[in-house]
Structures are given as C-alpha cells and as structure tokens.
Length: 328
Image (tube, rainbow, N blue to C red; front, side, top):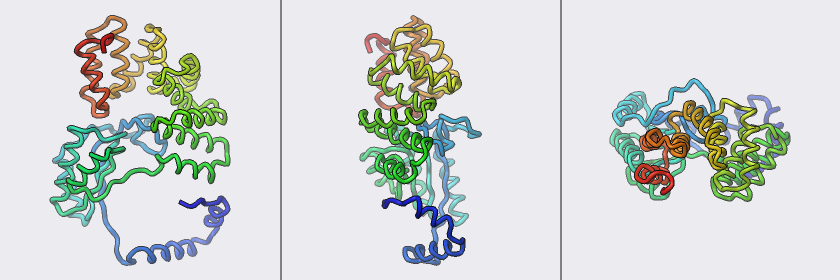
C-alpha cells in the first residue's frame, strides 16, 4: 500500500463529482468487465458480544447499541436464508460470526456443515469468523469455502501507515496508537505494545479504555501491579458503568488479595456481562476464595456453556471443577 499524502486527499475532495465518476469508471473498466457484477447475500450466523474493541463495529460488546445478541444459529436457518438468496438472484452467500476467533469442535463443525449446504445449492460460499488457524483454514477449504473475509486493520504495519498519513491531531494519533498497541499486545510483542499505549496516554491521559487495556495487560503479565491498579481506579472514575473496566479493577484487587473489594466489583461485572466467559471465571475464583464454593462452581460451569470461551480456558475450568482453585 503506497503512502497517500494529505494534499492528495484534499485534491481528490476538491475535484468535481463528474471528474471523480469518470476516473472511477476508468479504473473499473481497466480491471473488471464493464457489464458484469456479482450479487451476494450476507447473513449473521452469530450476533453481538464480540470481545474486540472496534469502534466502528456494532458487534463489539464494548458499546451499548440496539442489537439483539444471538448465539450461533441453527443450520436449518442458514439453509433457508441461502435458498431465499438464490431465488433472489445471488450467486454468492456470505456468513459472518461475531467471534474474536473460531473455536475447534462444535463451532467449526457447524460452520463446515453450513458451507457444504451453501455449496450444494450451487452458490459460492464465503465466511468471516475472526482469526483462524492454518488447520481450520484447510478444513474450511476442504468443505468448499470460496473466500475468507478478514479485516486488514489488524496489521501493525497498516496502522503505522495510517499514523504517518492521518495522525496529525493528538486525538487521532492517540486513538491510532491505542489500536496499534493493542495489535502488538495480541501478538505478544509487549515492548512495542507498552510503548504505543503509554504514548497514547501521554496524548490523551483521560482515555478510560486505553487505561484499562494497558493496565489489564500488565495484570496478566504480573507487571507493575500497583501502577496498573492506579490506572484502573482512574479508568473507573471516568467510566464507572463499563463492564470491562469493572471486571479489570475487580481482578486487580483479587491479585493483591483484597477479596472484599474484588467481590463487589466482579459481582457487578457479571451482572452487566452474564455471557462473558472471563467475567464468569473471575467471579467464580473470588467466590472460591471467599469459601462460597458451591456458587463458585456454578459460575465456572457457566463458562463451559459459552461459545466464546477459549480451549485453554475450558481446560482450566474443567480442572477447577474437579480439584478446586488452589490445586488448579
């Protein structure tokens, strides 16, 4: 991707609409057949509660939007929707799921069956399911998948180019540094992640979400716990109804053995996000520490029913249910 200067963008915006349409058509005719297009239909097979913090996406669990959350829908509903799409002239059928990443097992198997049904109807099949592994990609391809859609804005190199081009105001640059830092953090490049997130906070010290992201990352690494708690207390003062911040500060108090404070915050977090596996796991842990073991097992068991729980978490939960917390 070549760097686009601000002057070039301003030049495009100042052009007459007719000129822009002509240039767009010239590019289109150079690369595509002028008289053909593909009609595609899209269905959400799992809606809402995505743990990612993409500000442009209503599927994110971080924002309160008028969106009905749904678990993975039945295969029969996908077949019915695909038949309707074909009858309306579509030749491609796309299926999107609000997941951070695709889980092996039931979720993968259901998607494979959906792809096979779509292909049996004579339609192209495409999906967007979050991050996938190489073995999952192979399995989807073998099922007949034609295309996999994935956002390119998860690339730190892409963010770097945007920062160079558009990061002229402190607010925009702070937000872009936050997103690039989050990408580095998920890649476990913690040095670069911390540099970006700290830089973002220098530009915008009152961004509760950056404070929470950096602090929770430190908690997971057992790094600068006292500083992390100070950041979380500030984040909570700024956004005292955000369930992720409430969970983070509760978990911070848990780590320093302040179990009374921890229970108060984690209870509130699970009330706000009853379907989040991490929040249920955290609340189960604090209940166990408070010797409320039957209740702890209840919330741990909840995690096993949740689609977004990762395999490693499920393994830990199963161990806790057998031997308890101290031995796990």
